[in-house]
Amino acid sequence: MARKEKRNTSSITQIILGIIVLAIIFIVGNNFDLDLLKNLTNDVESNALENVDRKQQNNEVTNVDGNLIIDYINVGQGDSILIRQGEHAMLIDGGTTECKEELLECLKSKNITKFDYIIGTHPHEDHIGSLDDVVNEFEFDTIFFPDVSSARVTTKTFENLVLAVANKNMKFTTPVSGKEYSLGEAKFNILAPSSTSYQSLNNYSIVIKLNYGENSFIFTGDAETLSETEILNSYDDIHADVLKLGHHGSTTSSSKKFLNAVSPKYAVISVGKDNTYNHPTKTTMDKMLELNIPVYRTDELGTIECISDGKNITFNTSPGSYDYMGD
Image 1 (spheres, rainbow, N blue to C red):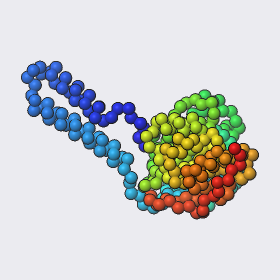
Image 2 (tube, one colour):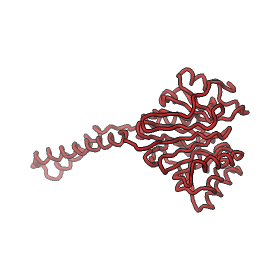
Image 3 (tube, rainbow, N blue to C red):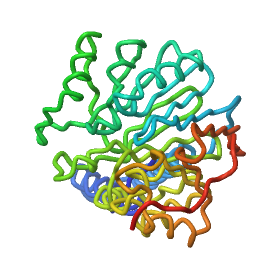
Image 4 (cartoon, rainbow, N blue to C red):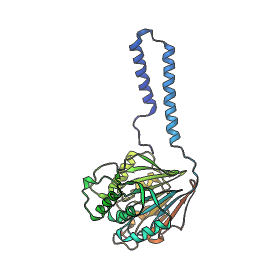
């Protein structure tokens, strides 16, 4: 995932050539060898073109073997997403404290013994409520969590997670926007957070884009319009086939500009049935209907399984409705 660049390759090449010419003239005076200068120029241009080719190759779609399996786990009014590719697994969020037994049972039923990555998107209880239990129960290589020191989070839920990680002699890895990681044959880039201080804890949410063959997926946590705008300002291409809508389909997320840039074929909402927050909202569902995006929602469909073979995406169920809870 390449960030937006302000200076193109040809401009950089011209600057390098100019420096070389000046250096040669300064060193050898008026008797410099024109043939030598021509050869040096050709070498610089060849290297520049090689770097461009390499950059293009890095952005090319790679062939993959096997399936990528994503389970948007029904944890009620919360988020928990299991991603598997071959023998590799990643968990994004752990739902509420009340879903502990159901979450652990679901993970064990998938024969999970270890995670390559665990991601706690942000400190809200409906995302990390049972994540300490997951940390206690399973081995893992890396656990991502945003730097919320400026927010001075002091909830018992957050303290439980911090203690569980410390008891495993592990430390949180702070997400760095733009950095890429591998999950088996899949790769994912961190898109957010971009800043270190926000008024809303939701905007600390870790947002990732995962690529598998020709397919791509974005997972947003509770990132609001502010975070979405920062992503749009930082990256040229955030198109994805499947978008997990931010903040359970509330009005604070899924701005029109963000939806147009992602241009998803499918949307997923992790939301609790008859929740007191009135999620999802009419505003968001009207956008889905207007853009003709099929919506898969856990309050209507339960746990949603999405499978990619690198070219085709299938779901274990038909899409849900465009019904809403509040305005």
